[in-house]
Length: 136
Length: 323
Image (cartoon, rainbow over the protein chains, first blue to last red):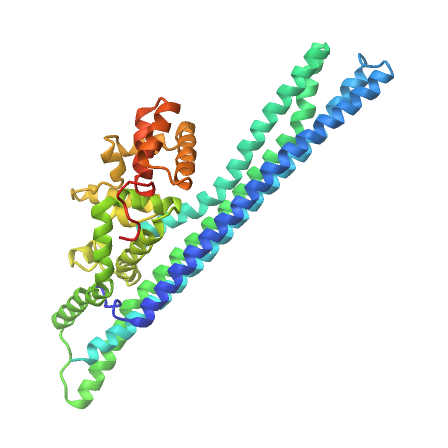
């Protein structure tokens, strides 16, 4: 059965504080997640450029040696592509991990606030009920 | 027993962990496809033997495959961790809720003992119930008194252009601060009562608390989070109660709410919003923006949507932020 908590100033103050904390927390996390996204957006084109440079250098080397039709030329290019693929996938994977960790940390903090809220609610209902019985 | 909200929290905890990894996996998969495609195209251009295609695909694709595998593993472990935390939390909340009746019983016994010693009578069950329900009903009064002046202002905002104000809150735009503050206060009115009802393990849950008139019906207009809003609409639906229009903009332009949501995801809408934002910064009038959008774009519905959203923000709209 419901108990009166609305008149409990301490409980209301707690709810207001925890509400503000949660809003700030969510906004801060979103801002951190956005920063990870921006970092990724600037990093990926640089990796692609470096990869293209590396392949151009390989082509130049093989061309000067007259080996453009050789199998080792194809292998060299494939190795350069693979190095670029490692850089790209590691960068995206690390960003994904960062975002997941930021989000998970927010979830953990929110769960802690939920527990705190339950405890505060119980304490406040005890105060309210005791007062209600004492009034008679 | 875990409440629906607690079960939702479990689902949210897990899905938030999964979403970040899933997004990274999708991005890596698309990068993989692009890298292999580019490598094969270049090889074909050079006249490389067809037999090398598989080798190129394998060499280029391997790092991406490895990372996708790593992410899948990390995702599963993070999801399990968050799910476990959420379930643990729900169990803890239930324990706290279950402590409520025990605590009330202890208080009653203490009072009875005190009265027996002092010659007073013990409260009967029906008297106790009556007192509790009365107290529960009365508890909203101080809250309502506290928010009454702001509620009047909220009504004013609602009457004027609430849907736009709501959109502003979502986008953190001019005028959104006032509306956001009002919405927050309105939420505070509902939240403590509902939270308390949940935490104390009300016999038949939130519905019973609502039957007492203690917990207000959810108002889709006062929640900022989309999932909560949909739950509120769902609740009203299930009980056959009139469902408020959650997005009056949809109504004012004669388009369904899901369609408005879809329109907002289109690239044309995003381009239009950028133009509208520039118009706002340049203190342009609504008519000027309308002329610009009509010239540049074909989508009439999209134009009406963007104009409706920016109506309060542009010169000559008749809207006064803060009124």
